[in-house]
Length: 425
Image (cartoon, rainbow, N blue to C red; front, side, top):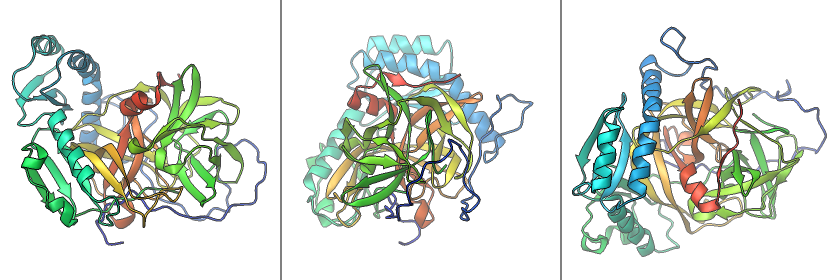
């Protein structure tokens, strides 16, 4: 795999350890010799007098805190957008150092204009013109991947712009390049070289009460694969663990890194959006996600969830590589992601599309995610706790890149009928 090639990270087949019962501990035996360096984030409440979390610059941490302060304003404004005429809506983005930017095609509806006026009493809000709305760009993206042959072996990624500039298509497929602007409703296209995306597979064992960010080994008729648990969620009054849909399909069984039974995948799932629910043994979920390195025995409590927005600073936590921060959401969203047959998911399935993923980059270099991190939580800091944003789908860390793609919790909640996330003090 060449450096810079983006891949929903390659799956790994691994040898099943001899099943054995173990004492319920959150540490790894000394016989483990491969340690992946990882970025850590502090467990302390942030203030100007306190140290910056390890792995982040002072300016990045300050920017994350400024955005967190604006989140309630953004949520209120988003609610006004969602409840009215959102035809012209493109995106609501965080400013790099605080404030909000609302991209809109045409004039704001009166209700949204009023909401903006109210929001400006609490924070800086810029209203910026967009040439194309979210709805128009997503419709054009849908046309692209419906047009492409389902058996194409060429990696293709279709992104729409949070600023309303149109599509970016990363593909070498002649069928993709044959599309005209007219066929896409006039939406302009920028062509880029392909960055192959294939699903990720592969800290190490967990036990009840279950935490997100732990290693999970999926067993099915195709073999055994490793992924990462995301975070605990509520559905119909019962808790489940959310993770990446390409990691498992009902009724797969899930085990920890020592071969001990964790649970199974009853569903529901939405494979086009890469999300699925796990039911873990005992049904006791801790409302926490692992922090620190790949073999960490500590974590942070979840205080709630937030929307994913362009410009947002986040962290992720994968069982294979640990926590990474200094990750910023781009103003592009991956409307479609092709899973080729030569890089199938955990069930051996390929030739299908994962859609509506969000793109982010680790701004200080290094991998944002590697093989085995799929399904792990995306979050940002809330004092000494975290607010979850989504779950890892893939990236190009194995080939030396810093790009991450993930599915946001808001989409998963709508798909799977989730009412919220499991929290802890």
